[in-house]
Length: 143
View 1: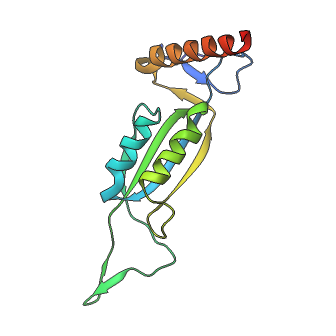
View 2: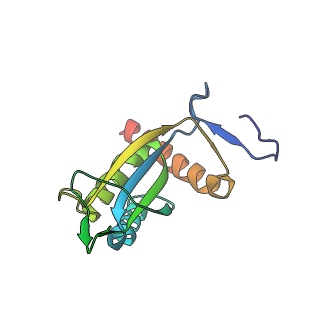
């Protein structure tokens, strides 16, 4: 694995090593009143955390005005950096918790991640989870 100048590791998705970790980024834009719900749902589905940033945006519906002032609903941009195998479960969980089936409640999408740095504090957890998955896989193959 390549090293950073500070000595940290860069985890490369396209590494020739078979056991290299693959990451994806889920980005969701939601109203602030559901941010905590989707973060909690994502954690229950396997996410280790989230980054929340206040945001604003425009959609197909015009914002409401009051005496010429535009009233915009507050929005949060919520980002989840995940191991690839967790993406589907976390995506389903945040869509359900955020009520994304209703118009105007939020959107979520997934982006590929080629390189990641700064995850040293979480690497032990990732390694343990992968080891447990391999053990379960082996047990399943033996039966």
